[in-house]
Amino acid sequence: MTLLDVPFADVRGDTLRWTLAPTPCTPLASRTIGLGSGLTVTLSVLGASHQVVVRRHDRPLLHETIACGIDEAAPLPEAHAAGGYRLASHVEEMGPEELAAQASRLVERLSGRTDAVLAHFPGDPHAVTALALDRSDARQIVWSTWHTYPQTGEIVATTTSYRPEEGTSV
Image 1: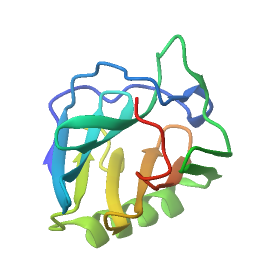
Image 2: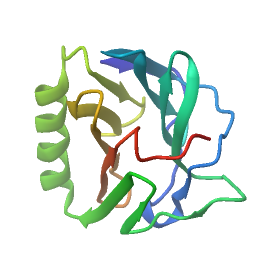
Image 3: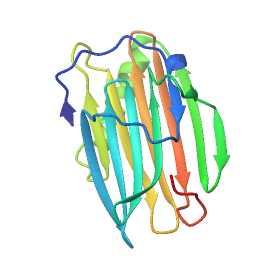
Image 4: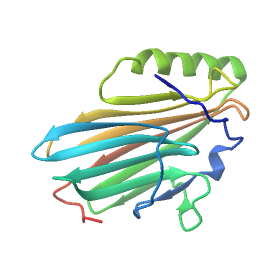
C-alpha cells in the first residue's frame, strides 16, 4: 500500500469524468505489469482518481482515465462498449460503518499483490483508491478499480475488459 502525502479531495462519485483520450496525468502511485507478447498495463492512482494505460512494445493502445476535473471528458457511464473495450461502473452508497468494513476488506484483499496498486489518502483511514488486474493475457485484459469516498458514504467500482486485437490504438 502506498501512503500518499497529498490531501484527500472532497469529491463525490457523480463528479467523476471518463475518457479514453490520451490525458497527461502525474500519478501519485503506479505499477506496470508485463503480460508477455510485448503487452504492458500501467495502473496509476491520480490525485482525483485513476488512469490505466495498455501498451504493446511501449506504443500506447488504450488510455482509460476516470477522474474529477477533466474538462473534455464525459460523465462516468454505467456501461460502455466499443472496439474491444468494455466498461461497467457502479456507485454504492452506505453508512460509515459499512464503508469502513468494505474499505478494510479491500485493503486486506489487495495488499501485497504485484498486479495491484493500493493508495491511502491521509486524513481518513478509509479514503482509498485501488486498481487490480483480474484476468490478463495477450487476448484479453481485465481490471477493476475502487474509489472510496468516506465523506459521502460512497464506493465507486469499475470493471473494464479490453481485447487488444479488437481495439483501435490511440
